[in-house]
Image (cartoon, rainbow, N blue to C red; front, side):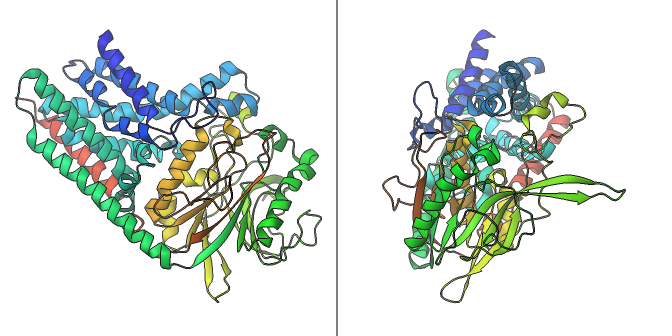
Length: 545
């Protein structure tokens, strides 16, 4: 059993290394920016599946699955506890408890998929490749929604930098990429088991999987070539991303550092305006003062922001107001918003963050989990927006630029991408604040997620980060070459108080239209869930001969 446990542990750790990683003890930079370690994902599950082969008791299968799952998710999101200790005020031991609860929640879905497939295989004799991709996608789809959802670490993101494979998400979403990764692992496992037992190799499944993988890569290259041709002829939007690079501890002190924060934002905003930017975007909640949600202009207030000559400004700011209650009295209410401003700083429209971060912007089950209340900064309760909202402004040719804002956490949910597609935006915008994560894997993993959103929708993404990783992403998932020496994604852009503010200026293509994925949504995931349910039902009735 010890050997099986070690195999399971190695699977989880190897798969975690296929995600973008940065370990401060080794380097403040991402250890594999080119993504060569993504190759590990195609065989990382094999040791675990070999360990599960021949296990007779459900308890052992559950233990092996749990060990691999815990190793993967601890390896993937170890950095979450940093925000709890550095900015939430939790002692280290309590932050580790909270991290472990989150890891257990995420690991439970891996366990569900693995134990379900182990049980199907045990009763029917069907090989892993026949059902594990379906049970896996069904479990990942569940994790996207259960208890508001936290789909971070979906196996599809292990291929976000392998762009020909990532293009598959334009048809079947990130779930389809995950299914392909699991399928390859399952076929390799069955081949090794056959060789070990002296049986003939499963030539047909191996050949079919090889052909499928080749078709996916060829199709991805073909799609990228077609998109590049569309991009070359598409109208452009010159975008300036301002990254202030301010330590989260300074930001949390609010008004006492407001002038310092504005002085790191405004000069680069003015520079982008002088250099011909059509749109300047500030990161999530970058403006240091809370604004009334229905403010008409920032020009008449003492905003500290000068009027611009030509550029529109998409400004991230918190809002605050007191809402009257039906029974009398009032309560404070806040939101996380972006405001679209004309060059004269009059407000045109506002989007309010749709998907709030549990235990970061609100506390679910507050009555039963009061010890976690301190993780949330002490301000008025956050309220999510009533719905998604495309923000639009006129261009010089008399047309309309259409932006789909996804504030921070919004962008990790692919269904938000699908919902926005109904309004046919041209560019996705992901204002974020990665300073919470410190020097860690978090900002780099988030960038991988956002690159997948670009591929899914076939739309460019502008991603300004308060501190972390800012980037201009093309519809192919490629990072736009930088107009400045810092480049579009500089590993040095990390939350350090000594890091200077940066400006990233570049042109993004404005593309309309839909991909297959944004047209049919999570149809593939739904079919996998139905297939997994059917396999479980048949296994219930059919015993292995």
